[in-house]
Image 1 (tube, rainbow, N blue to C red):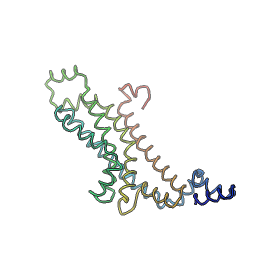
Image 2: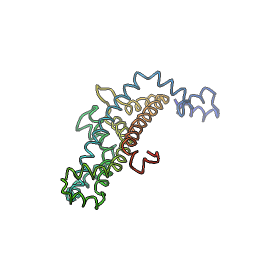
Image 3: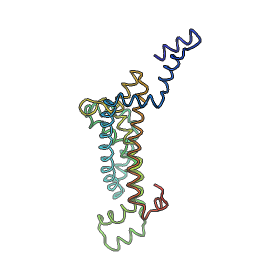
Image 4: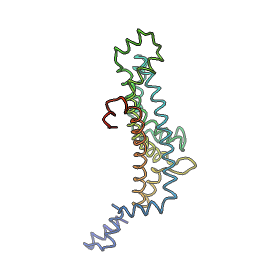
Length: 254
């Protein structure tokens, strides 16, 4: 549509009002047109958003659990950190657009593949930040626990982890931004989610092919809303855990 109108413009030197409006609608639709597309395509958009959200939540929660456990292991042994951390970096430095098709081949298409992509892109900030927090615990406090003959578990639970909590939450906040992005990217390359129905990323490809720009913007709006929900929830949890004692939240900042 757009190419045809431009060719006509080149030949005639002018565009009719209708032609100009068609080109404008393809490039930048009005908010009202985006809303109308959202209403018209709701039977496709909302199930797709649900699929993407579900995969992002699974990947995000998996990143928190596995990332925290891995950070505790890395901080407990320098030899283990030297042996495992480089491999974690290798996984993180491989572009997700390369990993996603490989994961689709290994695990086949489905919501589980999208969740794995979301996990891979979001777990590293948690590992890196939490490991930094656990290994930067005050040495005087560590010596006090050693003199008190505290066990390793007690040291982690009552000293290292509370000391590293702000670092951990910072990593979780970064992961909250990346998890929906990973789910959408995974859905683009994996193709379909649970039940053979695609998520937001897959739907965006279809709308782009149909030159349905208002619906494409509706996909972007839903993806943006998803990111806000993730980050907003993490900010609230961070405030609950830190606002009574940590400097970053005493003044009301997230």
